[in-house]
Image (cartoon, rainbow, N blue to C red; front, side, top):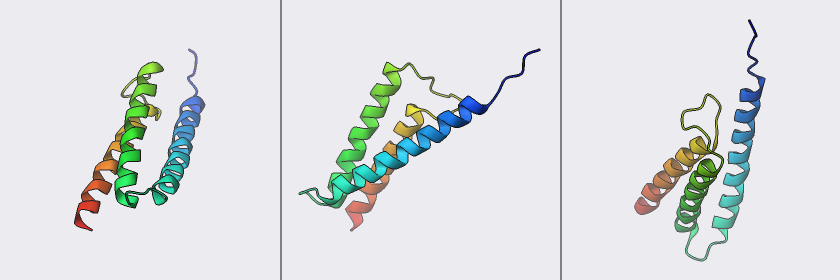
Length: 92
């Protein structure tokens, strides 16, 4: 019986986490220079990132509930952050 190695899944998840962190830093930097305010700029950029990750996930035909992290997981995280930032910006 052939053994299945878990190395590619761990590598894919690490790449997805790294990609998410780099994108989030870039989005935060762009939002800091937004003319409509940091909160509103960040919400708009996070919303666009949510849509972008969905399009990339569809284009690459990535499975929704894969064992490794992929663009669908990033989409969910960007959507959650977008909702959180929007809720917090309404109170401040």
